[in-house]
Image 1 (cartoon, rainbow, N blue to C red):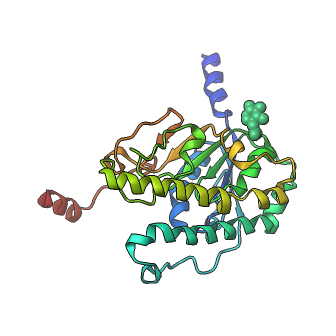
Image 2: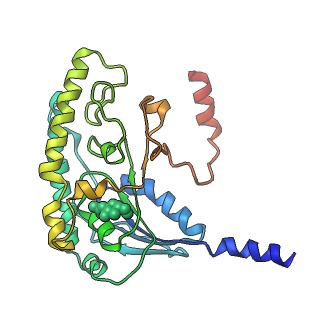
Image 3: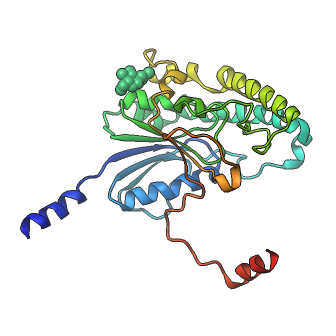
Length: 275
Ligand SMILES: *[C@@H]1O[C@H](CO)[C@@H](O)[C@H](O)[C@H]1NC(C)=O
């Protein structure tokens, strides 16, 4: 019996030191990861989180490394955007700008301190969105890392875990095509695939600025990224279509790990009558 009790306690000390890196300023991205980070803390892991969104109330096992709040991120005016048929190309301009703003945060004091710290971590969680300049932390801490996408994966992210990205049958994030594309849609999807990947590798990935902060021995970020252990993507086959996936590409649509709330009777009545 005592031995059994001992085993029961042994499992409870099996906790990891996890560093979460979410430097993009969009709150809608962070809320997806926050659920996971809080759950990891609740299950006894020591979670340290780099983001612009520190917890208002302290949470046990959860430590914030708060970035300065970016201005102008609360509202994006759709009316300022170009018309839809070129929007999918033009939106890259906004993402490039946002990537540079994100990489600039490597200059902030808490980040410089983290780069120069002697801290040890067991695992790194990092957002795969519009730049990899913060991936230098994977090289610094020499730990396994997990990529997270708060939306349909970016055209340059699947390849790093060798997930199929063939534009003949995998819709590009920016195209809004569904899985059954006709010939012209496939053609445009291919153009988009090439275009977005060139823009990413030349303007967004962030090798130059990352080298400046993490040192000249930093490997090329696209090479480092291929060591991704797992890629969690906020999609769902029912919404985003069925597609081939390697085992390390995992769809976690909705991040349903918290307690689900009951749908209010009005909403569920509306749903049932509309069916
Ligand atoms: C990728 O991981 C392997 C195995 O841990 C390691 O030997 C290699 O140096 C890593 N590559 C990079 C670019 O960090």
